[in-house]
Image (cartoon, rainbow, N blue to C red):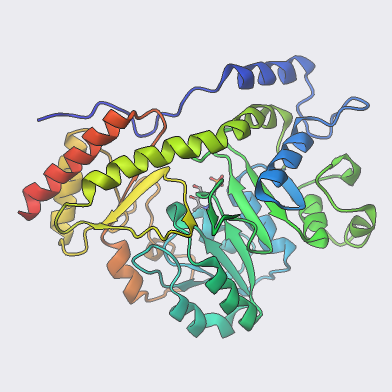
Length: 394
Ligand SMILES: Cc1ncc(COP(=O)(O)O)c(C=O)c1O
């Protein structure tokens, strides 16, 4: 029996260009984003301009993490304590966590077998909230035109959690550019890697002025290049608290060269994704996730459903794959483990029954596809999954 020897958590090394850029910053000793020499734009402000261009947004703010971007976005659109915020039932803990961090209350919306938000349930709950924090969980993007038709009709403000969709889009328009705010992560397991980090993008000058002030700008708004005019800051600067969560020049320096590689890396991720999908599509009982033609996805992870398997069958498949070196994360197991918590483990939010999502989440298997995997690696990983599923279900 073949065993896979690769690591699901191994990233590619940073390029020499990124290492050189980091060394240049270290040699200056000026790591804080506002510590700039006369006439120097600085790595962080330059990165913000470059990222805004990729998203096609007017403004961009680089911050300390994706989770920080989410909480800042909620604050910037005016969410108050005890206010209800809609969000998908299938997402990761930082999303309800961001809502809870400002003492607001997540109201979960069911998900479909496409792993995207259920429009019927969204319609049913729309009257209970004015804000939707939409998570493009694991890179699955709902019909964004249809979503905006619903949210506009109900007067709901949309914030997009694009932690898994940097570089992705719907109908050729980038994710993060549909809602009022897009939030991104540059944490190690995402599409560009600075260890920790994130972005917040928007076209709204007041939302960006507030976000910059919230992030801890110490009234140094003029050092931002991807920012609205002074008048916009003047209107908010005395009412907006400073809740520090800035990005520093070191991280920005290593991210800028990675942005240049993003488009090419998306092609590489999708080659790996398609290799696995082609092999898994013929496995009986394995449900692949539909990828609509309008969805311009980034296949940096792979999910499938084992809808007809029992708890113990899935447990056994996960275990036998693990014994052969293939790490499948299972959202349906009773105890949350390594990144996979399910909504009923978030006991700081009101208890909610999500019958439709339960059936789906309980059978989701999920794996990372790092770019350190070759196409041959992907073929072996897929073959092992096929064999182990067939061994249990045949
Ligand atoms: C769906 C989702 N949203 C938001 C985040 C938050 O990103 P960060 O870890 O940079 O705070 C993550 C991180 O894993 C995530 O998976």
